[in-house]
Image 1 (tube, rainbow, N blue to C red):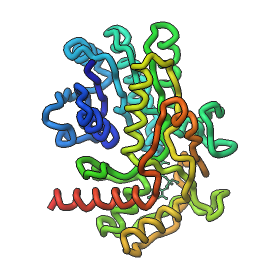
Image 2: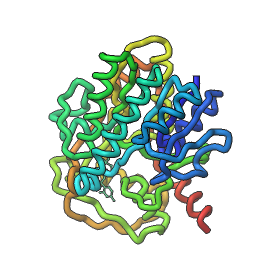
Image 3: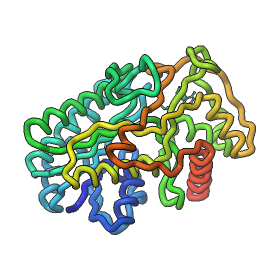
Image 4: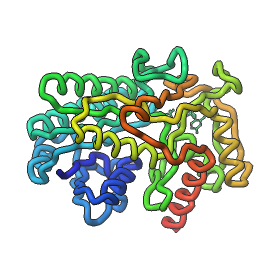
Length: 328
Ligand code: UDP
């Protein structure tokens, strides 16, 4: 019953690996180390360095380790990059996923959990957004993930590969035990950027767009703690193993914070008043996106434990400090 975690050396994947190892699951990781780190994978977990688009390698891993479930995180995730370079996003997030799914079908994998995104909704007409809302991505990133969702539904229908598609809202924070966190040197995500500004790792930060149709003019997002997100995957695995049908569920808490509110929280928690500049809008950003989390709670029994922005920020700051110590 070994679980294959793709992207297991990356930010969210490494938290998943820890969670699976903590409960005694057998785990193997496939990661091309483009943004992940070898040190993020526990020593006892086999790490295969390669692409999910390498069908031969995926087939070998599935056969050798008798993989019955795949949790597929490996992906490119930066919205503005996807606008600038759509073809590489479609290759990595759609084409490579298709190859992995094909290997899963041929290797008789039973369960597949897929990291999708709130970006599939685009700029929703109303919030909180439910899973039945129209999908109208505003960026190649969102489109590349939505295409893979479609592949999974068709493949379930044709071949019986059962899946849970989890649409992530804005993931942040770090393992409360500080064994993992967001370690990429080039931060683009808001809470990490603000944490770096608070710690003097960067001179300050910018707010991208202050003329959105929101109360303070900045974008609103639903920030979810990485440990709660990972727990939703464990719940999804239990759901599928219990014989329940395939499912698509949002992963967010159901309340949103503006960019300025997040920055204010980081300043308050850190006690540092760093420099913040107003800047033009960033390509591909919807004004407001907040999850309805009812389905994850009712269908998966998901019970978040860290639904508190200051706690998320505290863990993000602690991890940033730890990373700084590791480098010095
Ligand atoms: N953002 C910002 N300054 C930054 C990074 C992000 O103003 O240095 C804004 C961004 O424009 C968006 C929100 O913060 O409105 C969340 O962006 P992030 O990249 O964290 O996640 P996304 O919603 O794009 O997945």
